[in-house]
Length: 161
Length: 123
Image (cartoon, rainbow over all chains, first blue to last red; front, side, top):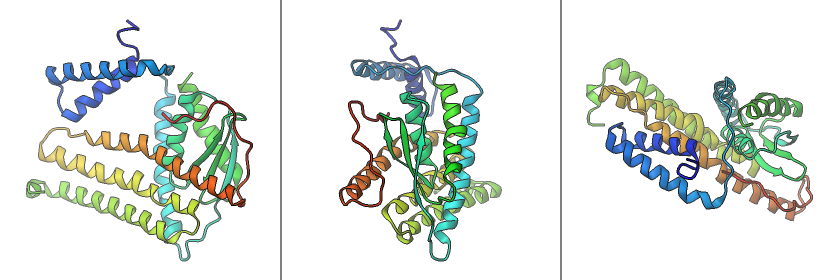
């Protein structure tokens, strides 16, 4: 089974993508999607990527809601800065020591931080596990450290075990 | 948009509002690219367009075509998904390049010892 379907979650996601692209759940598309998904996952096997251990829990919708909320809020905040009279802000770098070293945690965290206007993932020091962000409206460093650690990292560590 | 007249009025209003909202947010992001000062500050501006801007336009598109075809048209989700997966890669590349150049010029950016062995992975 593991030989035939090396990455079950990935296969499912690819089938779902194929069905969405074709906008149909007809057997032809299901079959074709499954074949393509299998072929795509087989090709990635030699890369030796460790599949994620995802624990299905309430943490997933909670994280999604938190991120959506933050994206809308920071969109408004950044738009306000841009449209303000002289567009002057106190931007700067923040360093955040992380607890997780899980690759999937870090990858999703990078997506979240980049997708939220006002914060950019600058660099991750993998030796000391310190993340450096650039923040557009930097008033209080601890505020951002709290957001990344309490709001995102804690939930991510619950999802990717 | 040849079929647009077939949209009910309330639908057309919602779709138009979402489209205008998305376009306005994207425009603000582009203005930010012009108005903000440093490179790092400028990098924050276009994310407006790639998040809420695109989001509103996609939502408008979903509502419009779901109403027109009287069935669920949600494949726009894929656009949002691919955008969310690919933008961090580009942004990080730009950020790292900027960081590298500032350090080369011995700027005000904090230095870090060179990493060994493993590097950060973006998947």
